[in-house]
Amino acid sequence: MRGQLRQRDGSTAKTCDAGQTRIAWAVGLFATHAPLIRGCLPATIPRRVAPTSNSHAGTHGEIAMNGNARNNLLTSIAGLVVLLGMSVDATALDRLRTPMQNAGGLCGAVNPADEAGLRRYATGIRNTGATNVQIACSLAGDDYGLGMTQIFVYFKNNAPRNHDVTCTAAAGTQFYGFTYSTKTMTLGPGGYNFLSWVPPTDFPANKRVANVTCTLEPSVTIHEVAERHNENVGE
Image (cartoon, rainbow, N blue to C red; front, side, top):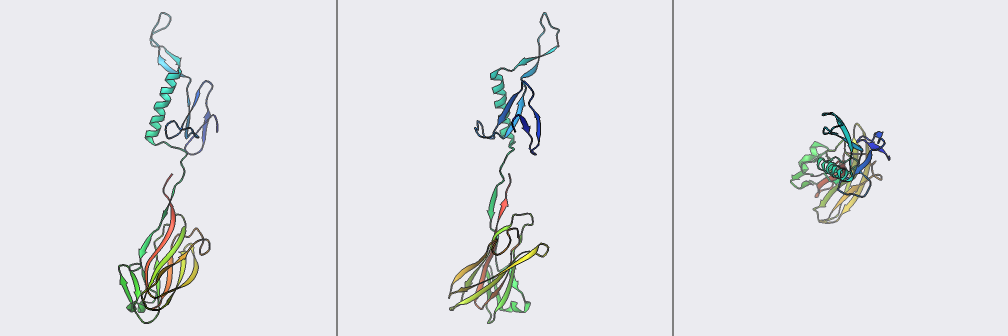
């Protein structure tokens, strides 16, 4: 808004008075684009006037600021603003985050009796039994973060024949509600691949917690569970 001083919170102060010089700096010296910081520079500055034959000692007067004085003052203030980091119109910045965890310490059997057929490794959890086992995994989420952009689970088939993997993703929490999506894929002998869920096809974009329940056939390993989301890292 021309002629007005914009505050950090977006409000505006009074218009520059008559005779004042309107000043503007962008963070980044001598920037030629839209200014970030604006203000009003007075047309005169107070000074102590030396006594003369026509004045009394100690009186105050005003002198007009010449061009050099104004430029020097502007440069000094602009430099101070940059040093203090007093930018106003900054743009929010997002970064892609991918929290992931190996399944060995993250997942477990839905039925505790099935734990006997599971083997936990530093790199994952494998069904070493003769029957299918249901596995549940839940990643920590950030209630104040941005919504997830993907959930994925990585598997390997350690058998010499094909095996199917079926997983149900439950995106969300009990308080905010869950969205469920079930997917199946076939892994060839010694093969590895991942199942993936993305919004808005598989869950709403505002979900922040990843949970999966998978049916592991014998000799299949879950290696890792992960989710992706954008994080606002500041302005």
